[in-house]
Length: 151
Length: 151
Image 1: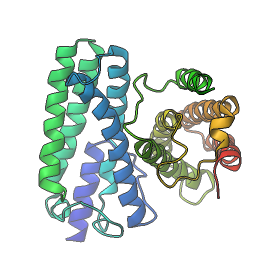
Image 2 (image 1 turned 90 degrees about the vertical axis):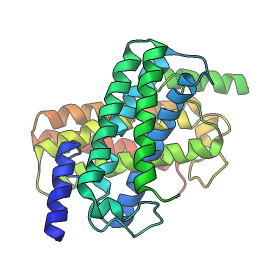
Image 3 (image 1 turned 180 degrees about the vertical axis):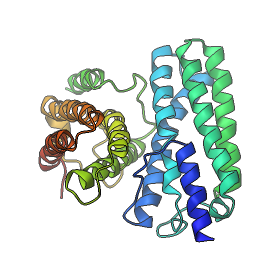
Image 4 (image 1 turned 45 degrees about the horizontal axis):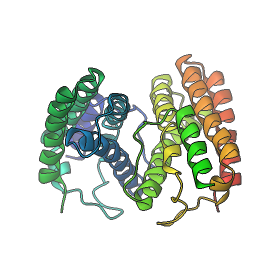
């Protein structure tokens, strides 16, 4: 069972193209790493959202820079959800992450895909393209949070 | 004085190519952001160090993936050291960061430069190149920590 989980995770890791040597000294580090990478991702995603929602003026260059960072950051957290990292530090991660590896992996891959689309949309310099791609990416965040993150 | 600090920071930000819209809602967010980005950077840098120091077998692909992430992450923390972010949450950042902007900026730029060199060295797939570039980058981390980070 543990082997299957490990294989599933390895497969997930391969798919979401995280470093082959994505190892953590202890569960606590993995938990801090995924929370840190999601926080950085969220800050840049939020800046794009502020433009998409008209809260700050649209700045095509800033949108592109932020979207490129979102696309890079979106590849990182997944390797930090390895077996045994469901506890070890305060975490909102639901146990289903480890019991529904295949489904969880779909969400992870979806965010990576939508982030790449967001970066491509930002490169067009067109606010409507950015708004559309941001909306899709935001839905992906919410779907995963609703399913796998405790309130 | 505040204007000068802001201009110095804007110049630094421009040089280290952080997003033009690198804004934080509150000091607490900036502090969490820089700590988060340094933590992610450190995890990947540490994986390269483990190979450079022979603690884990050299894996050229993993070294390159980790070095690319280090190079991306090394661009991020600096914008989060803006005016007024010296307090607001627990931080080891020394006040000199804000009183020695030019010197601090040199350290920031140096890390970005060394990180790019590290990624280039990793791409050669040669362990000796990786060791040399890792050593230089590690010196850069230490120099800045010694000068601007409280123990």
